[in-house]
Amino acid sequence: MFKGLSLEQAPPFEAPLLFFCLALLFGLSAALSMLFDSSFGTLHLITLGFMAMVMMGALQQMLPVVVGVNFQKPWRFSLATAIPIAIGIISFYLGFCCGLNFFIATIFLGVGLAIFIAATIFKLIKVPHSSATVWGMRLALGSFLMALLLGLHFLSTFALQKGFNEHIALVHALFALGWVALLIIGVSYQVIPMFYVTKEPQNSLKLLFVFAPFILMLTTAALIATKFALLPFIALLITFAIYAVMMIKLLWQRKRAVKEASINFWYLGLSTLILLPFAWWIDGERAALLFLFGFGISIIFGMLYKIIPFLSWFHISSRGFFDMPTMKEMVNEKLAQLHFWLHVITLVTLVIDYRLTGLLFGISLLLLAINLSNPIKIYFSYKKRPSPFGS
Image 1 (cartoon, one colour):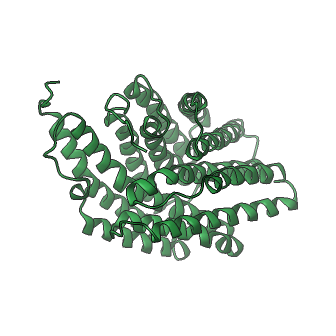
Image 2: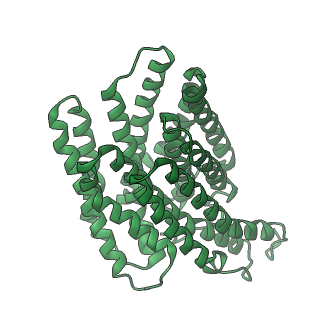
Image 3: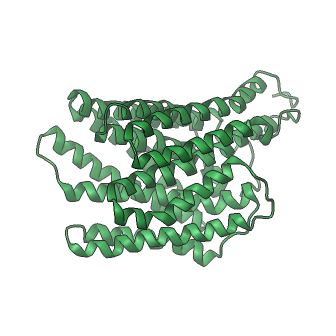
């Protein structure tokens, strides 16, 4: 995965870090909002403010690594996309909570997300060799684009006070789910073998679990106004569950059986996908929350515990320093394990009390921030030092 990677290929650490820091702020805002509110505004603080921000930052970092292409001015690109998106998310939330006109949210979200999606898809289209991970990224961004267009349409109807279209809302939620799932699936084919020294799935299976969900989502969306939409949707959930079983098996059979919190987050997230069809059969709304917190956020937590220490180590070593702590030494493993068990308890509260979930989610994010502040501090401390290479 990282073969041939150089400092010139990778964006500066600050570029994805901007997305990660904004994600933390929005995540904490969402946790606070959950104590008092359960509107669409709060939901989108989680999905757009926290989850999408992390995923966009990770995508910007991974494109040079996995695909071999990069943005010429990554820091400017981060500012040009993250800031308008952040303003749009704030405006969106204030629209639900304070009656602010949704026109502002529509403009800023539309511009920021459209620039990010269009630029990233353009880079991915130019790739000469398409792996399952590249296809996962392409289809994930395609899903994100569909969710964006439907969301903007939805916001415009609110702005013009034209009412609520349930079918559009469902399709929007479906493609938003697809954006999260497809990106994680595509990325997992690279990061799980690299970070946890596992075997890789067969290429035919990798492609299957990228294309099948996308086709099932399109089918569900086409039939959304009919009773037949349930069939492809249930097939979609079962497909996710089979993918999860495959990846859990790979993790269980890994060559380096090191116990750490990041692996536990992967186990938890993948196990949630297996339970999702049963959860949806019992309660669709709770199943959606289980997907977000149990699958999406669990995997995001596990990824951040690997991505941020790796980026710190990589950028320091690329400047010629070799006396820095290892990736493992940068993270307090006991604190990470505490974070993991707190997150497990957070998932349990989904069936107890929404406000309690918000409280524990906020504490969970604070633990994450405390633990991952160390590799960030280490990076900036070395950045101040002159490079042994003289640059």
